[in-house]
Image (cartoon, rainbow, N blue to C red; front, side, top):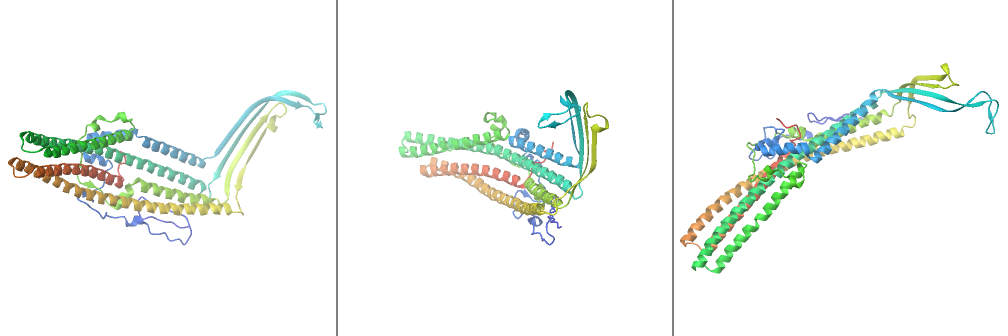
Length: 473
C-alpha cells in the first residue's frame, strides 16, 4: 500500500496502489505569491466572500441576492446536491441489518384425506375442499465489514457528494461574477451612450456654426457637408451602445431567472460604471487553491476514486453475512409446530480461486485514480494560469484606460483651443473638424476601455474563486 499526499492544506488525497510507486511532483507545492501584481491590487489582503460589496452599490447587492434565490442553473445544482446526499444516506444504510417481512392470506381448493395421483387422475379416497391458508416470513441479514468494503463505499459516496457540493459552489461563484458583469456592462454601455449623445451635441453645435457662416458667405457648401458628415458619424455611434446595453440587461434578467420583460428598473437606469472603493484584495496562490470550488471538486473526485480502489480491493477477500430467517404457514392441514420454521447462521461468499474479475476491477480503479490525480494537477495549473492571466489583463487594461483618459482630456483642450482660434480666423475649418473628430474618437475609446476594464476586473474576481460562500449580512 502507498499514499500520495498532496502538499496543500485542506486538500489531501490518499491513493492505494503499488508498493514502490513514486508520486509525480504536484503543482500545488509551487503555489505561492502571484507573479503579476498590478497597481490597485493588494496581494496581502484576502478576498472577502462577498467581493461585490467592494463596489459599494446597493443595486448590485440586491441583484446578486435575487440571482442566488432564482437562478435556474443554481437551482439545478442544488437539486443535484440533494440527490447526491440521498445517495450517501443509501450507502450508510449498509451499516444496518437488512430486513424483509412478507405475509399473506389465500383461499382456495385443497386436497384432504389420503390417496395419490396416477396418470394425472386423482386416486384413492381423497376429498377436495376449500380453505384459508396463512403465511408470514421474516429475514434479517447483516454484512460483517471485515475488509472495509462497506466503509469504503460510504466514503466514496460521501466524497462524491462533496464534489457535487463543490460544483454547486462553482455555479454560485459564476452566477455572482456574471451577474456583476452584466450589471457593470449595462452601466458602462449606458455611460458610453450618454458620451455618444454628448459627442453628437458637440458635432451639431459645430454644424450650426458652419451653417450660419455659410449663409453669411464666409465658408462654402463643402465645409457644411464635411461638418454634416461628422454629425452623421456621431449619430451612428449611438445605436451600437444602446443595443449592447439592452443585450446586457437581457443577460442580467436571465441570470436572475426572469423573462426579458423582467429587466430590473434600477439596473436599466444605471449610466455610471461603479468602481471598487478600495484596492482589489487577491491574497496568494495557496489561499486561491483553498478557495476555488473547481480545485476542491477535483480533489474530492480524486478522494472518491481512491476510496473505490478500497472497495475493489475488498472483493479479494471473503464476504461474511450474518443472518436469520423465520417462516410461518398455517391452514387446516398444517398446524401447530409444523407450521413454523427458522434458520440462523453465517453466510460466506468468496470468488476464490478465480480472482480475475476482482483483480481487473482493482486495475480499473487504480487507473481511474491515476486519471483523477492528473486531472487534479491540471485543475491546479489552470487555476493559477487563469489568475495570472486575469491579473495581467487587468493591469494592461488599467494602463490603457489611464492613457486614454489623458488622451480624452488633451483632445478636449485641443478642441476648445481650435474653436477659439477658428473664431479668431487663425486656423481653418478643417483643423477644427479634425480636432472635433479626435475628441469624439477619444471619448468613444475611453468609454470602450472603461467597459473592458470593468469586465477584466470581474474576470479577476471570478478567477480568484470567491462568491460561493454565504454572503455576509
